[in-house]
Image 1 (cartoon, rainbow, N blue to C red):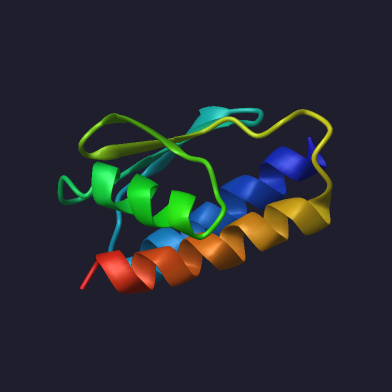
Image 2: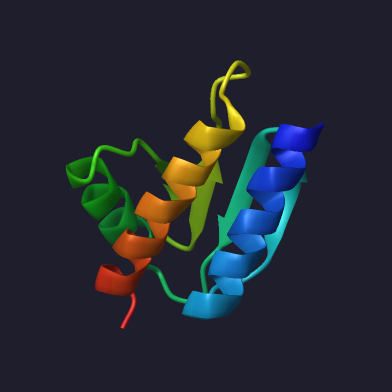
Length: 90
């Protein structure tokens, strides 16, 4: 459960930093609610940066990392996502 806590806490920090919504979910299946319908733009920019995300709705990002991810890989994902959000969410 340490990895899910690391991911959840990191997403909460990014959400507060970039004015996003609530982080919800359980384990490593986590969603980030977006205040604006920027999901597809974030997914596209993330893919260009080497990060695969899913936006099941325009105002929701879904995270489903592999169960064997390391804390370092989760940290790297959060760094990339921070950069992407800084570009997309103005």
